[in-house]
Length: 86
Image: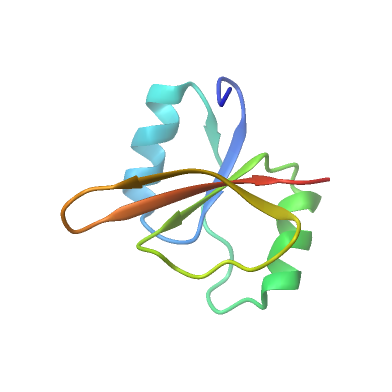
């Protein structure tokens, strides 16, 4: 997964996502509006040229335009990385 220079957004955990983006040399663009419908979310990601969407703590994502590429788990946290299909 080549994240160097990629554009990233996340569903929550702004601070953790910024730190990960920094170490991956990626650009972090923040979180979308809360409770945004998933189709609107995908359009927003595409409109802003986002390459990857970080989903924290096993939130459900069921959109054909988002493909899970990696899942990481710790004791009390999880992070799923989805690529945005254009």
